[in-house]
Length: 71
Image 1 (cartoon, rainbow, N blue to C red):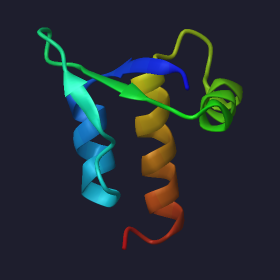
Image 2 (image 1 turned 180 degrees about the horizontal axis):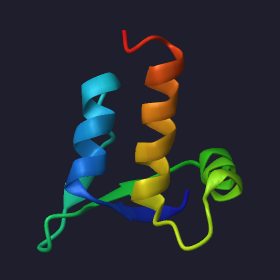
Image 3 (image 1 turned 135 degrees about the vertical axis):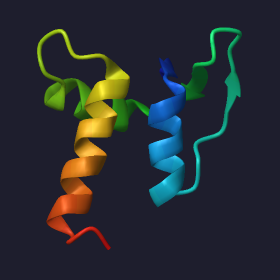
Image 4 (image 1 turned 180 degrees about the vertical axis):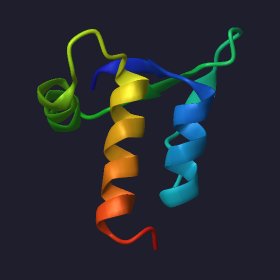
């Protein structure tokens, strides 16, 4: 499983919709989490040029919520 770093804001948004991913908080305030290989590949396909993994996740969650009518 790929190990990746996400921002506190990204983790908080994930936690507001899903169960927060397990991980450990880093000294810089970000989080180190594991993502399964299939999810990692999917994120890489959706990621825009020069977009951070956190920004990609945030964008996908916001779009998903919007499509669901912000339930």
